[in-house]
Amino acid sequence: MKKHETTRGQIDPYNTPAADDSASLAEILSPLIDLFNDKYRVPGGEDYEFEPWGLMGPSLEQSPNQEVIEIPQEVENSQSAVSAILTLLWRTGSNKLWNQSRFQENDPERSPLRFSLVKTLYWMETHWQWNRYLVVDYLGELDRAAATDQIARLVAALNGSYMLLSISFAQLMQF
Image 1 (cartoon, rainbow, N blue to C red):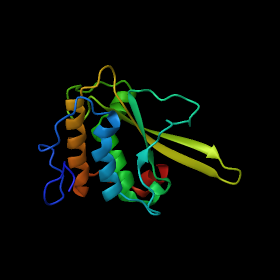
Image 2 (cartoon, rainbow, N blue to C red; image 1 turned 90 degrees about the vertical axis):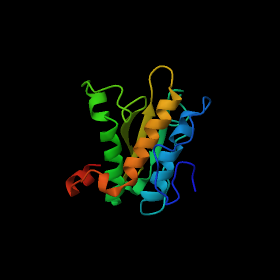
Image 3 (cartoon, rainbow, N blue to C red; image 1 turned 60 degrees about the horizontal axis):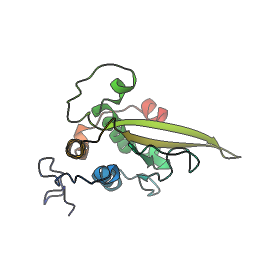
Image 4 (tube, helix red, strand yellow; image 1 turned 180 degrees about the horizontal axis):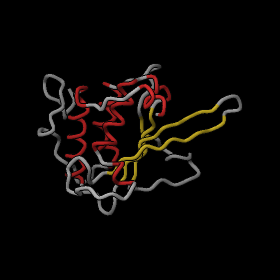
């Protein structure tokens, strides 16, 4: 049983591990990665995992205030996985963050960590290859306790399939 789970395997946002003052962003995000790998697996069994080199490989430096999570290639073949990712983006206010709208900055699901989805496209000599990434970052000094609480709340919300956004086939194909 993981530290952030109840005995029935459900996430308990009020019984989360204490925030470690030295915890890295990757360590804080681990329960979210665990949830996606456990509950939102995609055909082919590829894992959601941290991208060690950032978005563009080892030639570009990644910000120390950022983690990049690679989304499995076959994600578009799993409606529940896409719905979970879109729900995560909606709950964290990424639509409001990136279009300069205002949102309540003290909302525990929307701060201190910011989430966005980045898609890259590569020509692979015979076909196009899409890669998708969740980019998680923060501004200023990381409030580890607030970030740990934010992830616990998001994991609790995403753990219940009934809380996910409904998506149409057309929305799934756009992903």
